[in-house]
Image 1: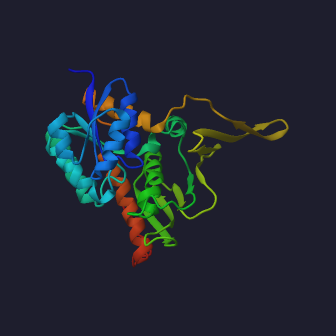
Image 2: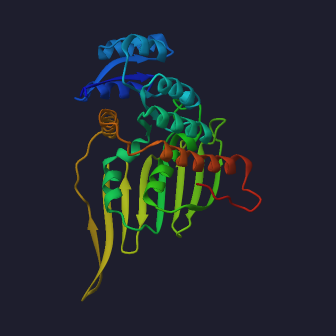
Length: 322
């Protein structure tokens, strides 16, 4: 089996350009081309990276025959382009949120199984070094609180904060709490756009764990933090600095003593770790860390949060999902 696989990137906007860059930095991958419906943008990124640029997925496939592609286009186009790529036999990494509807994600899952293709969802925070560390060390959380807030950016205008930001935190929390969801309660508001710019959700799991998520893109302060409360300690994760702080109390002859730990672990660019994982999955034909089922479950929770924000709680007050 050829060790170096051929990759393309569909959509080279703000995030897609970095997908293309990272592929050129990975030893087991070869970037063979980029495509974008903005020809000037495609040519600019292609010229910068020394690869051909095309106006469509089909043109890239016809001219370069990639083994796999990253799909980094607006959310509304995820399903259509991913399906076309997979029908052509390509392995796919599709940026979050995986699709706009769970049924579309289910259809992509079926197609990947039929064609024996790797289908990874781009939940990049799973590859944050701090999250990778706590996923191995966090034990039986009781309560989780996530805050992802910052100033407004006009760059994202096709979705609100739930599908743009909160879905990261939903995915992380679902990965840390091994229990079905019992209830979801959510609220939000439109401030600067026609979509929700602030959202607040509480997820209660059947095992009694409670998670609270706050996201905002109209805050002066920037903060991306996750706190995990366990019976014996409290863990704080800073997504931006990729650091972890652990507070715990121990009993001594003098009474209670607080111990503060700052674990040291290797750090790397999350996108590079994510794409390196995708490359290895394509090479070895194995299932990715974040597959379509994870993406679908996070999307289902996000859709229920959106429903409550825009339509109000269900008649019973709350609705369980996932």
